[in-house]
Length: 258
Length: 197
Image 1 (cartoon, helix red, strand yellow):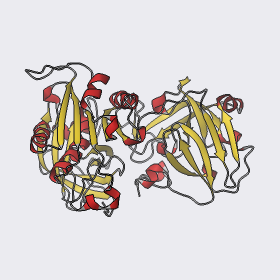
Image 2 (spheres, one colour):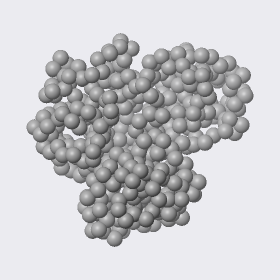
Image 3 (cartoon, rainbow over the protein chains, first blue to last red):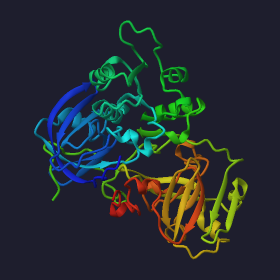
Image 4 (cartoon, one colour):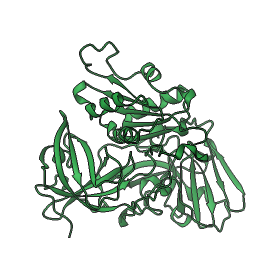
């Protein structure tokens, strides 16, 4: 796809929807009239300014993509944090703050556009895509899965989501609908603390065996996107390499310290 | 005048003159990288400086240590808004490695195991401004923080401090590295907030 790269900049964002996402997280839908659009997988910076001019800036992944001026975030409350508790607990519809973006041009994915499959660049066929999320790390991957669904892209895409309990799953209804609507998108779950009723699989920290069973095999040369805490991403990425995946085809995004 | 957000008062008020604009103090040590962590043993590790005329200077792990390790206490700043103040490192100053290198080039491209690159002006990595760091906080550098050896250039945002560094290629003309091609600022001075272009 040949697309102009929108230049990032500061924008005023108004909160148009704020709703609980999980027990610890909230979904915010922003209207950003000057937003240049963003690719699936990008992030932005939120800047809050106090009355005395004090500012605090944090980066958040974007759960939406495309040319519109609506930007969807899902923010997990970091206990003791300065910005996320404000966004999760205090911001309300109509409030405004600044955002800078879109940012990041590497952890992104573009759907195959109609007609593009016949070009030389796609002569070998598009690469299958594997998405692997730990907890709130699913947010940028939701943007990728949604872009895939919206484009009716026939590229094989599979997503593995690891969460503590079913209630901790972000965008659960949207992802289930994407999986139902398209044969090209498959959704797998792993539960680390408690699984839904009727679950017959393993409950506990994600294992290498589960990753091997539920990701596109290395032989199919998928592009792999892994997003989650540092520990999660380190474990999963090292297993993928042990399972034969090409390190150059694994893109990672991490949050939190060590 | 910046834009005021209703109800936001802020809690991180322990402002410190050592904190560049837009930065927040981090208690932990966040990890950021574009791909998986390469595992590099010190007995396989090798570091090369290649000049603009193609001359290669090589160091294995022992040769690096023999070049002279020193203690470095410094503040570090990540483009994603966290800073750590007074961090403790041990490493070999690039000055020691450049003693044998003859060059008129103005820029270097740092190359890493795993394929990462980042570009720097040569004058900003000499004269006690950059190290090949091998220890952090009294311990060998963790692989996820770039061990066994990473570049340490504290005066610039930390994406310039290439993890898993394996060499420097001297360049007469500046060229963007990995993140610089993906939208990060070509230079990256935290005090001027050179984050993105």
